[in-house]
Length: 302
Image (cartoon, rainbow, N blue to C red; front, side, top):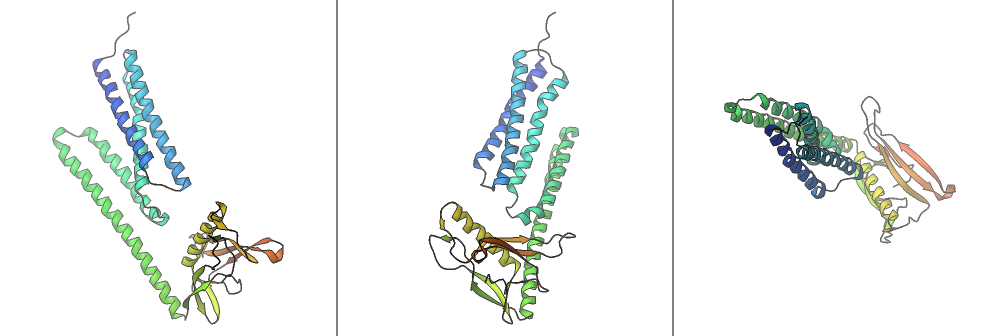
């Protein structure tokens, strides 16, 4: 029995899939080699998605070329199966592009991520409706899609501005409350040992608050101290700093942020290595007072 050759329409469809797959693959490779540097977890997630995109477009290109070389009649189901990995790759590439354009700050990502997901869904639904569009309605439909995109962009801009404005107002209210309660800001050196970059012996100074002979740390300073302690110990690990020298060594600063319905207030913790106690480590957890600052007077860190 003679085999039925591939029809001209199916041949044209398969031939069109190959350059589409190549274009998506080229865009993905560009994102892989020219994307900005990210932290390990985010970089692995992005790399995983990019590899999935390349595999999907490679599958479409491979099966298209194989069917063209086979030169036998195919069904509509075969053609759909061949093109489906390309559609999956396009969706994954959209998510990678959105992910790369979100701001680096975790709080900004949390604020804008819901709007970004809504924008993706609406764009996909609107673009899917172009299947039913008539040629004379192409321009109005494209304008409507752009108008919806602009509206979502304005909403995202307003949400980000509102979030930044709320942060500023909250910080002003916090400082006003502290000054009203007679707290005074000061710069004081740390009294615990940390790795010493380039052999510097000078102790690190941090901002704190004092009132009636007692010393307090606020949460922003806690985040700053946590970052600096992490940086110094990382430099120690790669040989860029000398070991800490002192009777009490600060190993780690830990912050448990406030979680609605789970943790009412943030907590601040210090992991200390005390040589006078035989090199034992101790975790000291502090809770904020009514003004939202942590009393570190008895701890002796400052």
